[in-house]
Image (cartoon, rainbow, N blue to C red):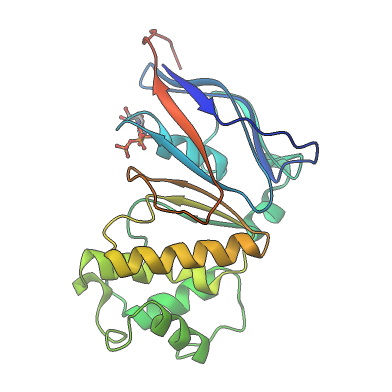
Length: 231
Ligand SMILES: Nc1ncnc2c1ncn2[C@@H]1O[C@H](COP(=O)(O)OP(=O)(O)OP(=O)(O)O)[C@@H](O)[C@H]1O
């Protein structure tokens, strides 16, 4: 079982997202229990913990992709299940896999990400997509099949969503994976812009983050003595 350890903060406003007493039991193992978590607009949270501690599981719960074994997740004070459409309009979730279509070019991936993100005006070869590719250092690779790009280049294609989306809440599983030093700096700059605009971010990362000018808050899933439980 793991015990949540969070930093202390005092804020009386309604959180943008909060988890109230959530627990996860997977394969008869308690990953976390009675977890309390609240995220407010403009905040950046890092969820850390050992391999298998339940970080991805918690992110998927917070993104409404997985039901907690007990407890609930709330967006702007509304239970997710009853507020799904509004929540999805404000959510950008990127899982730990690259989340790109390998059989499409980088440019096609960026287009489809924009279209599937709800932008009905999006067109293939959109100037905005070229801008995003340029910002991510992907110019010259736009016609390449994404599956043939390197791991870091594929990650950059996946992360273009952070440049084209208008979602308020980003939930990102290991976004820095495979990025080089320049890629990490680019992503940190984008985080800062998003937070300065009042956006919020929850992410996992195994790396200690050098986010000196970003107000990082920590939630650690720490291992406790395991108890056998049924799901
Ligand atoms: N679909 C599933 N069914 C049963 N158990 C699962 C399932 N998915 C994950 N688990 C288990 O839940 C535990 C937590 O997995 P999770 O991916 O959340 O860990 P993590 O903290 O993100 O790990 P890592 O740092 O390695 O990415 C693991 O022991 C894993 O085997």
